[in-house]
Length: 237
Image (tube, helix red, strand yellow):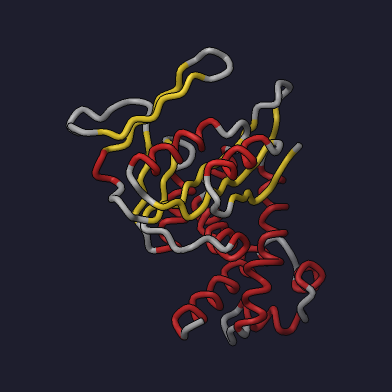
């Protein structure tokens, strides 16, 4: 880890701790993190930065567990099992914290492009792209009028509905590394279409990440397509 990477990790750890502190006392935060309350006070107030090892623990370990709990508290399910995640996908500051935690937890290689699907995946895609200093691209279910060439991926779903996504052909260059992200992965059909777009572009897949996984079908399906890391911040059966 070079000096710039170390500094970025330390600042990310502080950002995570400050977010957790918004709803906790220092003693409560100490119980969650296992760190002394006095040290936490100094980190949160900017008097000192945590060391690299402690920062990595906060971002990759404590951060993942606590952000997952926060995420679970913000989402709901209706009687038919549909997920309401509007309390998450509309909260850009929260997603900005998720990005470094996801990167640290799942060991994604730094991508050139973060690819997602319009519309709910866009805010997460923007957060992940900002963290990695990468471009963000999002596929749509309709073609943009002024764009001449598209990469098109089409699939007939089990319900009989045909789902098609389009991405402007110049959004991903051959040989670039692509991280596929989405707010939710259930059956894996959307992620399969996004992966197909990346492969049609002759890109390398760095991984697949979702905020929420419902069951194992989607993550297993994505893992079968790519040998890259596949993960979700939280999972429901």
